[in-house]
Amino acid sequence: MRLKFKMLTIKQVVSQIRSEDWFVTIDLKDTYFHVSILPQHRKFLRFAFRGEAYQYRVLPFGLALSTRTFTKCVDAALAPLRLQGIRILNYIDDWLILAQSEKVVVQHRDVVLAHMKELGLRLNGKKSVLSPLQRTTYLGVVWDLTTMQARLSPARIESILAAVTRVKEGRSLTVKQFQQLLGLMAAASNVIPFGLLYMRPLQWWLKTRGFSPRGNPLRMIKVTRRCLRALNMWKKPWFLSQGPVLGAPCHRVMLATDASLTGWGAVMDSHPAHGLWSDHHLFWHINCLEMLAVFRALKHFLPDLRAMCWSPLTTQRWSTTSTTREVCIRAPCTSWRTRSLCGPRTNSSR
Image (tube, rainbow, N blue to C red; front, side, top):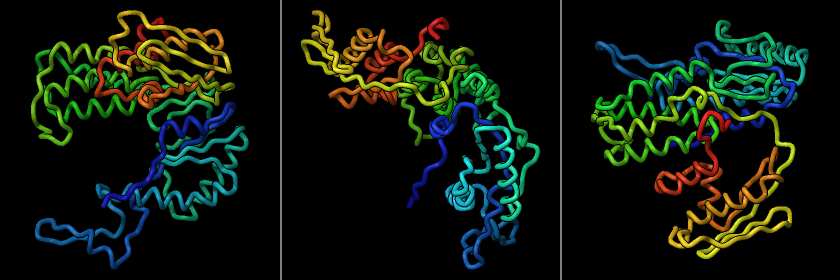
């Protein structure tokens, strides 16, 4: 049975950061080995090597339950600190302390370090950054409060570019190598705006080649020109250097849209907008028309939407999902329209 639990996400980090925050990052040493195993349970963690039987006395690496168990233990350990008002985020052995001033973050750092010493948690001094900063790297993302911007770290960008460079026309790669590339792209899409949309062309191409995550990981797939076109955006450093603006939006509005086979309509702050479709639109699928209705509404209300955070509300759950979650892998044409609506096209579009 798979036990569910939630780990820290990039989106949660973005929501926690405030302007004028200061950072301190802490890294633990020998992560899972801090958690002891009950003597009566150690028999379940036995293995044999060269005729000798061994059993773990601490939580081992590689065990499916290790991440969940350690995260639950750390959450319990940090609970008293959070009750004191200390803002601390934890992702396995990587912790981030946030405070509204340099002086306060130093005080909170000292409290956390003393708490760690009391619990027997070992600090990795080489990877920790104990000096207060307003620009730090955490979870592979550079959080810069001097510009209020978040971007992938240079190391993450280099790893993506290196993986994409290995994909060459006529060369054959294994399913496992494509899985690793998709994993890098999916992780980066947590930071790059509409990054998931630009994963879709590669996923469609892999689908035409019989790609299956559960299939043989050593099966070879030959790279074609279409595959290279699907990766075109991921070869551009400016695209990989994009990221969300930190801080809560100053003003949020709701834009409601609807579409039929003959026309569209929209309402924002009690102000209506509407129109009829052209003759060639009469043959479009209703999902495409819903997306086009969102586009027409945004175009109409653009002067009022500048510098605002807007949320689409449509009668079709699909089109709202397409513009907010970027999930359209089963519908290539509609995902293309979503990219046309939301995604960047050239360097100048930034």
